[in-house]
Length: 300
Image (tube, rainbow, N blue to C red):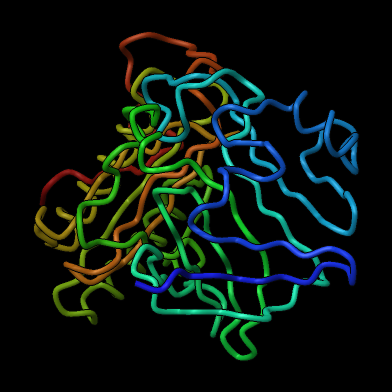
Protein backbone atom coordinates (compact mmCIF):
# COMPACT_ATOMS: atom_id res chain seq x y z
CA UNK A 1 0.00 0.00 0.00
CA UNK A 2 1.35 3.40 -0.96
CA UNK A 3 1.41 5.97 1.78
CA UNK A 4 -0.56 9.17 1.29
CA UNK A 5 2.05 11.92 1.38
CA UNK A 6 1.53 15.66 1.07
CA UNK A 7 4.68 17.75 0.70
CA UNK A 8 3.94 21.35 1.48
CA UNK A 9 6.21 24.29 0.68
CA UNK A 10 5.60 27.00 3.23
CA UNK A 11 8.75 29.03 2.75
CA UNK A 12 11.78 28.33 0.53
CA UNK A 13 13.68 27.14 3.60
CA UNK A 14 10.83 25.24 5.27
CA UNK A 15 8.96 22.11 4.21
CA UNK A 16 6.29 20.13 6.07
CA UNK A 17 5.49 16.50 5.29
CA UNK A 18 2.15 15.09 6.47
CA UNK A 19 2.01 11.30 6.48
CA UNK A 20 0.74 8.42 8.56
CA UNK A 21 3.92 8.22 10.64
CA UNK A 22 3.91 11.89 11.66
CA UNK A 23 3.42 12.52 15.41
CA UNK A 24 -0.10 13.52 16.35
CA UNK A 25 -1.18 17.12 16.43
CA UNK A 26 0.54 20.27 15.24
CA UNK A 27 3.85 21.37 16.74
CA UNK A 28 3.14 19.33 19.85
CA UNK A 29 -0.43 20.58 20.27
CA UNK A 30 -2.68 17.51 20.44
CA UNK A 31 -6.51 17.74 20.52
CA UNK A 32 -8.09 16.79 23.87
CA UNK A 33 -4.69 17.16 25.55
CA UNK A 34 -3.41 20.67 24.81
CA UNK A 35 -4.96 23.68 26.53
CA UNK A 36 -5.41 27.35 25.68
CA UNK A 37 -2.32 28.08 27.77
CA UNK A 38 -0.28 25.60 25.68
CA UNK A 39 -1.51 27.17 22.43
CA UNK A 40 -0.74 30.73 23.48
CA UNK A 41 2.65 29.73 24.84
CA UNK A 42 3.49 28.47 21.33
CA UNK A 43 1.81 30.98 19.02
CA UNK A 44 1.17 34.00 21.23
CA UNK A 45 -2.04 35.86 21.99
CA UNK A 46 -5.13 35.51 19.77
CA UNK A 47 -5.92 38.16 17.17
CA UNK A 48 -8.76 39.43 19.37
CA UNK A 49 -8.75 39.26 23.18
CA UNK A 50 -10.39 36.06 24.37
CA UNK A 51 -10.63 34.76 20.80
CA UNK A 52 -9.36 31.56 19.24
CA UNK A 53 -7.73 32.67 15.97
CA UNK A 54 -3.95 33.01 15.87
CA UNK A 55 -1.18 34.01 13.43
CA UNK A 56 2.30 32.48 13.56
CA UNK A 57 5.10 32.18 10.97
CA UNK A 58 2.74 32.66 8.04
CA UNK A 59 0.17 30.24 9.46
CA UNK A 60 -3.38 31.04 10.49
CA UNK A 61 -4.51 28.74 13.28
CA UNK A 62 -8.19 28.39 14.18
CA UNK A 63 -8.72 26.57 17.45
CA UNK A 64 -11.91 25.11 18.88
CA UNK A 65 -11.88 24.96 22.67
CA UNK A 66 -14.07 22.94 24.98
CA UNK A 67 -16.63 24.93 26.94
CA UNK A 68 -16.64 22.35 29.72
CA UNK A 69 -17.23 18.68 30.49
CA UNK A 70 -20.30 16.69 29.44
CA UNK A 71 -23.76 17.77 30.53
CA UNK A 72 -27.09 16.02 30.07
CA UNK A 73 -29.08 17.68 27.31
CA UNK A 74 -26.01 19.21 25.65
CA UNK A 75 -25.46 17.29 22.38
CA UNK A 76 -21.90 18.37 21.71
CA UNK A 77 -18.39 18.00 22.86
CA UNK A 78 -15.95 15.95 24.80
CA UNK A 79 -15.53 15.09 28.45
CA UNK A 80 -12.58 17.41 29.00
CA UNK A 81 -12.05 20.59 30.98
CA UNK A 82 -12.96 24.04 29.72
CA UNK A 83 -10.33 25.60 27.41
CA UNK A 84 -9.00 22.23 26.27
CA UNK A 85 -8.28 22.10 22.53
CA UNK A 86 -10.85 19.98 20.65
CA UNK A 87 -9.64 20.70 17.10
CA UNK A 88 -7.22 22.96 15.21
CA UNK A 89 -7.45 24.13 11.62
CA UNK A 90 -4.05 25.23 10.25
CA UNK A 91 -4.07 27.33 7.06
CA UNK A 92 -1.39 29.13 5.05
CA UNK A 93 -1.67 30.93 1.71
CA UNK A 94 1.75 29.52 0.84
CA UNK A 95 0.78 25.85 1.02
CA UNK A 96 1.47 24.15 -2.31
CA UNK A 97 1.14 20.46 -3.14
CA UNK A 98 4.34 19.00 -4.57
CA UNK A 99 3.52 15.29 -4.27
CA UNK A 100 0.14 13.72 -3.64
CA UNK A 101 -0.53 9.97 -3.73
CA UNK A 102 -4.32 9.57 -3.54
CA UNK A 103 -4.62 5.79 -3.23
CA UNK A 104 -3.88 5.33 0.45
CA UNK A 105 -6.85 3.53 1.98
CA UNK A 106 -6.19 4.87 5.47
CA UNK A 107 -7.64 8.18 4.33
CA UNK A 108 -11.38 8.46 3.86
CA UNK A 109 -12.32 10.76 0.99
CA UNK A 110 -15.28 12.99 1.95
CA UNK A 111 -16.59 15.66 -0.47
CA UNK A 112 -17.20 19.01 1.18
CA UNK A 113 -21.00 19.55 1.33
CA UNK A 114 -20.68 23.32 0.89
CA UNK A 115 -17.74 23.96 -1.45
CA UNK A 116 -17.68 22.37 -4.89
CA UNK A 117 -14.46 20.49 -5.81
CA UNK A 118 -13.24 20.65 -2.21
CA UNK A 119 -12.54 17.29 -0.58
CA UNK A 120 -11.53 16.16 2.89
CA UNK A 121 -9.02 13.30 3.20
CA UNK A 122 -9.48 12.07 6.77
CA UNK A 123 -7.34 9.63 8.74
CA UNK A 124 -9.39 8.95 11.87
CA UNK A 125 -6.65 6.85 13.47
CA UNK A 126 -4.16 9.74 13.33
CA UNK A 127 -6.70 12.54 13.77
CA UNK A 128 -5.87 14.39 10.54
CA UNK A 129 -8.28 15.98 8.05
CA UNK A 130 -6.46 17.30 4.96
CA UNK A 131 -8.61 19.69 2.94
CA UNK A 132 -7.85 19.70 -0.79
CA UNK A 133 -9.16 21.72 -3.72
CA UNK A 134 -9.26 19.15 -6.50
CA UNK A 135 -9.31 21.75 -9.26
CA UNK A 136 -5.56 22.26 -8.74
CA UNK A 137 -4.72 19.77 -5.94
CA UNK A 138 -3.93 22.66 -3.60
CA UNK A 139 -4.20 22.18 0.13
CA UNK A 140 -6.62 24.62 1.72
CA UNK A 141 -5.83 23.58 5.28
CA UNK A 142 -5.11 20.78 7.70
CA UNK A 143 -7.58 20.12 10.48
CA UNK A 144 -6.26 18.27 13.53
CA UNK A 145 -9.10 16.40 15.22
CA UNK A 146 -9.62 13.76 17.93
CA UNK A 147 -8.73 10.23 16.85
CA UNK A 148 -10.93 7.14 16.75
CA UNK A 149 -9.26 6.07 20.01
CA UNK A 150 -10.51 9.31 21.59
CA UNK A 151 -14.17 8.41 21.00
CA UNK A 152 -14.42 7.14 24.58
CA UNK A 153 -14.21 10.80 25.64
CA UNK A 154 -17.06 11.97 23.45
CA UNK A 155 -20.07 13.13 25.48
CA UNK A 156 -22.95 10.60 25.62
CA UNK A 157 -25.51 13.05 24.21
CA UNK A 158 -23.15 13.74 21.29
CA UNK A 159 -22.74 10.07 20.36
CA UNK A 160 -24.78 8.41 17.64
CA UNK A 161 -26.75 11.53 16.75
CA UNK A 162 -26.78 10.33 13.17
CA UNK A 163 -27.80 6.73 12.38
CA UNK A 164 -25.40 4.79 10.21
CA UNK A 165 -25.72 5.75 6.57
CA UNK A 166 -27.51 9.06 7.23
CA UNK A 167 -26.11 12.54 6.77
CA UNK A 168 -27.06 15.74 8.56
CA UNK A 169 -29.46 18.06 6.78
CA UNK A 170 -27.96 21.33 5.63
CA UNK A 171 -29.03 24.06 8.06
CA UNK A 172 -29.06 26.56 5.19
CA UNK A 173 -31.77 24.57 3.43
CA UNK A 174 -34.34 24.52 6.22
CA UNK A 175 -37.86 25.34 5.08
CA UNK A 176 -38.54 27.99 7.72
CA UNK A 177 -37.43 29.41 11.05
CA UNK A 178 -39.15 31.87 13.36
CA UNK A 179 -39.25 33.13 16.93
CA UNK A 180 -42.19 34.00 19.14
CA UNK A 181 -45.19 34.85 16.95
CA UNK A 182 -48.85 35.56 17.42
CA UNK A 183 -50.89 32.34 17.13
CA UNK A 184 -52.37 33.39 13.79
CA UNK A 185 -48.92 34.13 12.36
CA UNK A 186 -47.50 30.84 13.57
CA UNK A 187 -50.42 28.93 12.10
CA UNK A 188 -49.77 30.64 8.76
CA UNK A 189 -46.11 29.46 8.82
CA UNK A 190 -47.20 25.92 9.67
CA UNK A 191 -49.85 26.00 6.95
CA UNK A 192 -47.15 26.90 4.43
CA UNK A 193 -44.99 23.99 5.55
CA UNK A 194 -47.93 21.61 5.25
CA UNK A 195 -48.76 22.83 1.74
CA UNK A 196 -45.16 22.34 0.65
CA UNK A 197 -44.91 18.87 2.21
CA UNK A 198 -47.98 17.73 0.27
CA UNK A 199 -46.09 18.51 -2.93
CA UNK A 200 -43.06 16.40 -1.89
CA UNK A 201 -43.97 12.69 -1.95
CA UNK A 202 -42.75 10.59 0.99
CA UNK A 203 -41.48 13.67 2.82
CA UNK A 204 -41.21 14.17 6.57
CA UNK A 205 -41.78 17.43 8.43
CA UNK A 206 -39.27 18.03 11.24
CA UNK A 207 -40.26 20.61 13.85
CA UNK A 208 -37.34 21.52 16.12
CA UNK A 209 -38.31 23.87 18.93
CA UNK A 210 -35.94 25.72 21.24
CA UNK A 211 -36.72 27.46 24.50
CA UNK A 212 -34.99 30.71 25.44
CA UNK A 213 -32.61 31.79 28.15
CA UNK A 214 -35.56 31.90 30.56
CA UNK A 215 -38.00 29.04 30.04
CA UNK A 216 -40.77 26.98 31.48
CA UNK A 217 -39.86 23.43 32.32
CA UNK A 218 -40.57 21.36 29.20
CA UNK A 219 -41.25 24.45 27.08
CA UNK A 220 -39.37 23.39 23.91
CA UNK A 221 -40.97 19.96 23.81
CA UNK A 222 -44.43 21.43 24.41
CA UNK A 223 -44.01 23.94 21.61
CA UNK A 224 -42.91 21.26 19.12
CA UNK A 225 -45.81 19.00 20.13
CA UNK A 226 -48.31 21.86 19.78
CA UNK A 227 -47.12 22.52 16.24
CA UNK A 228 -47.22 18.82 15.37
CA UNK A 229 -50.74 18.42 16.72
CA UNK A 230 -51.93 21.44 14.77
CA UNK A 231 -50.63 19.95 11.51
CA UNK A 232 -52.20 16.59 12.30
CA UNK A 233 -55.62 18.04 13.18
CA UNK A 234 -55.86 20.89 10.70
CA UNK A 235 -54.11 19.34 7.70
CA UNK A 236 -54.75 15.66 8.38
CA UNK A 237 -51.06 14.82 8.15
CA UNK A 238 -50.28 11.48 9.80
CA UNK A 239 -48.00 11.38 12.81
CA UNK A 240 -45.61 9.16 10.84
CA UNK A 241 -44.78 12.15 8.65
CA UNK A 242 -44.09 14.61 11.46
CA UNK A 243 -41.24 14.65 13.99
CA UNK A 244 -41.59 16.94 17.01
CA UNK A 245 -38.13 17.53 18.49
CA UNK A 246 -37.08 19.20 21.73
CA UNK A 247 -34.08 21.17 20.52
CA UNK A 248 -32.95 22.43 23.93
CA UNK A 249 -32.12 26.09 24.49
CA UNK A 250 -30.97 29.16 22.58
CA UNK A 251 -30.67 32.82 23.45
CA UNK A 252 -34.28 33.32 22.33
CA UNK A 253 -37.15 30.91 21.71
CA UNK A 254 -37.18 29.65 18.14
CA UNK A 255 -38.74 27.05 15.86
CA UNK A 256 -37.07 25.49 12.84
CA UNK A 257 -38.97 23.53 10.18
CA UNK A 258 -37.41 21.12 7.73
CA UNK A 259 -39.16 19.16 5.00
CA UNK A 260 -36.94 16.27 3.95
CA UNK A 261 -37.33 12.99 2.04
CA UNK A 262 -38.28 10.10 4.32
CA UNK A 263 -34.87 8.43 4.15
CA UNK A 264 -32.92 11.56 3.23
CA UNK A 265 -30.78 13.96 5.22
CA UNK A 266 -31.64 14.14 8.92
CA UNK A 267 -32.10 17.51 10.67
CA UNK A 268 -30.38 17.73 14.04
CA UNK A 269 -31.09 20.03 16.96
CA UNK A 270 -28.42 22.71 17.34
CA UNK A 271 -28.89 24.39 20.74
CA UNK A 272 -26.56 27.23 21.70
CA UNK A 273 -27.09 27.29 25.47
CA UNK A 274 -26.19 24.60 27.96
CA UNK A 275 -29.12 23.61 30.22
CA UNK A 276 -27.10 24.76 33.23
CA UNK A 277 -27.04 28.31 31.78
CA UNK A 278 -30.84 28.53 31.58
CA UNK A 279 -33.14 30.03 34.18
CA UNK A 280 -36.16 27.75 34.64
CA UNK A 281 -38.96 30.06 35.74
CA UNK A 282 -41.38 27.32 36.78
CA UNK A 283 -40.97 23.59 37.37
CA UNK A 284 -43.31 20.97 35.92
CA UNK A 285 -45.44 23.51 34.05
CA UNK A 286 -45.32 23.09 30.31
CA UNK A 287 -45.73 26.22 28.23
CA UNK A 288 -49.38 26.40 27.14
CA UNK A 289 -50.42 26.22 23.51
CA UNK A 290 -52.89 29.07 23.70
CA UNK A 291 -50.72 32.11 24.52
CA UNK A 292 -47.71 32.97 22.35
CA UNK A 293 -47.59 29.36 21.18
CA UNK A 294 -49.69 27.61 18.55
CA UNK A 295 -53.39 27.76 19.31
CA UNK A 296 -54.85 24.36 18.45
CA UNK A 297 -58.50 24.57 17.44
CA UNK A 298 -61.06 22.21 18.89
CA UNK A 299 -62.11 19.40 16.55
CA UNK A 300 -65.17 20.34 14.52
